[in-house]
Image 1 (tube, one colour):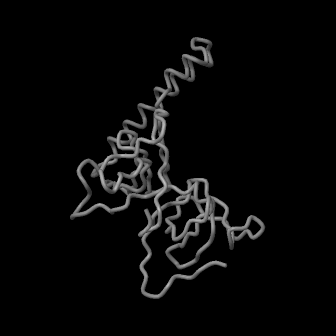
Image 2 (image 1 turned 135 degrees about the horizontal axis):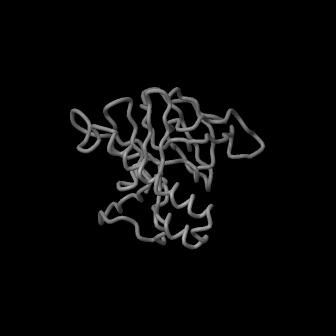
Image 3 (image 1 turned 180 degrees about the vertical axis):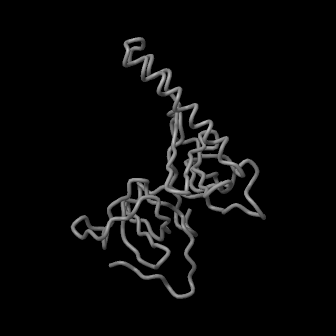
Length: 195
């Protein structure tokens, strides 16, 4: 029951597949599996049916997935010529990630050596979020301060996906209906035209 790309309609990714990939189905039925999706594949969420999400790929191939697992991408791509301010050079993000990893490693070594108990380890690492994927010249780096993944192929980076909740359409304020857990949950975006 997969749909094909409609003539004249452009592909605009709304989500990416989680980094570890995910299973897919021909219909919203666990008994009808199809080819699994590769990690970080851009997809367009075209329909929701409960927890099921009907996605379309750039080549027009479509399938059903667990929509709860999709990672939303920013609604508007970077505008203007050149990257947005602060995204030109990946070295500062890599340095922050390197420092966060060193902090985590230090706390882990103290825990392993008996210098920290479990509660103290949890206190030292609370709110720490690190993410780096390097695949040849391509790099994805998690920007903890902005709550988003950045992508680059060399000296420049641009926003790739965000875990910030969407702003309310009428007030412009972010959704405060979720409990603060120390980091934002990955947001799910409704298909274009739905609220």
